[in-house]
Amino acid sequence: MAKTVVLKRKPLTLSERTYLPQVVTGLKTTFTNMFKPKVTLQYPEEKPLIPKNYRGVPTLVKDPNGREKCVSCQLCEFVCPPKAIRITPGSVPEEEPNREHVEKAPQEFEINMLRCIYCGYCQEVCPEEAIFLQDQYSLSGYSRDEMVNNKQKLYQLGGTLPDRHYKWDKKKDAEIEGNSH
Amino acid sequence: MIDFLPQNIWLSVGLKVLFALMMVGAVMTMAGYSVLAERKVSAWMQGRVGPNRTVLPFIEYIPILGPLLKKLGIFQPLADGLKFLFKEEIVPGHVNKLYYYLAPLVALVPALTTMTVLPFGQFYWPDGTVTTLALADLEVGILFVFAVSSLGVYGIALAGWSSNNKYSFLGGIRSSAQMISYELAMGLSLLPVFLWVSVPGASQSGLSLSGIANFQEGNAWLFLVQPISALVFLIALFAETNRLPFDMPESETDLVGGFHTEYGSFKFGIFFVAEYAHIVIGSALFTLLFLGGWHFLPFMDDPWPANFIGSLMGVVWFLAKTIFLIFFFIWIRWTLPRFRYDQVMHIGWTKLLPIALANLIFYIFIVSLIDQGIIS
Image (cartoon, rainbow over the protein chains, first blue to last red):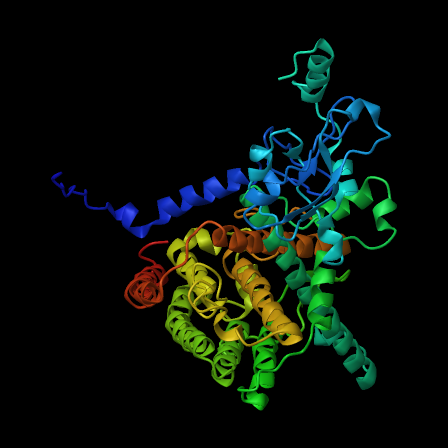
């Protein structure tokens, strides 16, 4: 156990006991502070710089070919701690030939932003890299219904992100080559 | 000021009322703008910007000047005042209604009454006579100020008591204790000043505010002659105006809002204005007593001519000193931490009072030695 040492303090001098020199020092400090640059961000006009990996509003993204990536596996719905996500699974529309190897697509995808806690589990769990928490941080609405982001809104917020895998293209190529699985 | 008023009684009374309204207007405007100054200075000292959004319609579009005024928050006091006016008027059910409504008025009236005897300049007539600019230049001005300004504590004590709330009550009690403790030191610190000013053969009474200010013309300012008196008076002034570091009645940190916990809307606004009016008047008082009033610099004669322009410049110079002191009040507030209640009492009774007494005795000796021609 560490020994405690009581430090001996010098007795205060007379000028220190009046506190006046210290007060003057304090006044100097505050006065010089008046002329230093201000740290205030004039918010609506100036916006803060959003760092990478910021966890903003969860959004759905498309790959650079404009295809939706979500296959409605519902893992995000399952993992979502506050149960903010609700997915209605559906099939891929027939009229989109370049998505023929995709198995499913969400018919409806809703994220209730009144429940969402921005934990990012949905992004972490997504096997298709289809859901991302991006740099949006300010959202507001007049009713509860307005605060539920539907599929259209989610794609509008998400936009397109670069894709490193093109998973479904590879599957298609593999099938044409004849060595799928 | 009586001597130049017209003979017609109605005209003369009307003029007096007009002057009084102008004085109230000036002091209230200064109080309003010291609220703005407080917000701005505190912001600057803390690395913030302060109020910079309020602007009247169309003024914003004046090039250069409009945005500058907006940035300085010049219109903020207007918005603050309107806010107090239009807020919902809430009276808690447990208060004593009569005294609850009376308290803000009792707090404001003394603050506004002291300004009547406050001289703020001199008017040089073309024929060479000099009139002191004041609503009433009393021979015993300073006594009047002391007598009336200490009544302000009744407002605070009454507010604390009538609110029927423990926090308010504690605030009121503390306030009265603080006021009584510092009143003594304040009065004692000024006695040497009166001794010093009342030289044998003086034309004006040593208790007259304008007399004290004029005594310092071309002479040493009194804070140079009596630094201890000035210091004790300044500290007591901080306590009397309930400013930090002596914000006992309010004590936001431990008493919610102190005496005005139960007050809202315009009633709170009145307390607020009264507090700042006290600061404005206190600053003016300190300027008159220790900083030479409207006279230029210590040991120098007034550089301005003895005519209309000169009178105006004297008033402006007096205002400049007062505004600097208001700034000093704000500056101190955002520099020093507040005292605990027992520390306030300790400083008041065991430090300031003995210092003021010793100072008085010291100057009694000095003045009597000067009177007997032993030192000069």
